[in-house]
Image 1 (cartoon, rainbow, N blue to C red):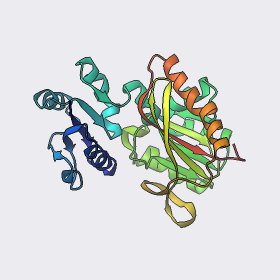
Image 2 (image 1 turned 60 degrees about the vertical axis):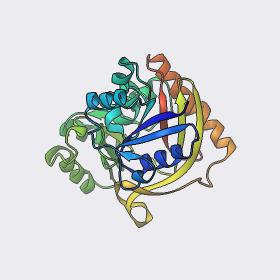
Image 3 (image 1 turned 135 degrees about the horizontal axis):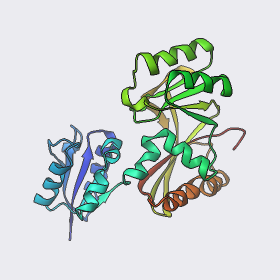
Length: 280
């Protein structure tokens, strides 16, 4: 029997979901909530807020939706997967605990530390004074990351004391990142080419979809602050079988095992943002 599918979100990734699912002979009706100008080519856009979980559930029940696919981090962080599962509805994405790998830098760093998954040195800070003390311990250059979701913009790299002072103002005086910066991960600055690895996971089972290299900084030559959007190409020539095996054994598989150990097996897409330092 052909399936009715609901896709939550309004961005490019949701348009890609709708485009591809539309090609599947097993799909029937495709809905996007709220969707965009692109998605309406392959699906019916529905003007319901993705923050209103009950209204989404009502729509699912009224329209015989077989599975809901969640695109943005916001609804995942708000627990929509947990809510749907409690109402016996099929939904694709991580639960609220698993989502913290993306929605909380501190949660992710603490998990990596606990399970010995490679990561830079970091110190969790909640105010300006703690951050200054962390800078004295870690030195310069240093990275300040808002703990919560900040649309990809909550990271400031400080190469000089002046840049660090400016970052302190942005985080603690101007409060540019709002509630996302109630906690700050102050981190050792490591440098090297980035590799992003994309997986689909179900507990301990996973498939690597592909890899890419991102360039997140606003100016040429990887200068300036990080942006919400980025330039990327896929795949990257840096990626090879030896590196993939290392990423699997040292990062992907320990992370999935850690989530099982923590009582929240990870399901859905999981993005690994990596950096090569001295070929490691």
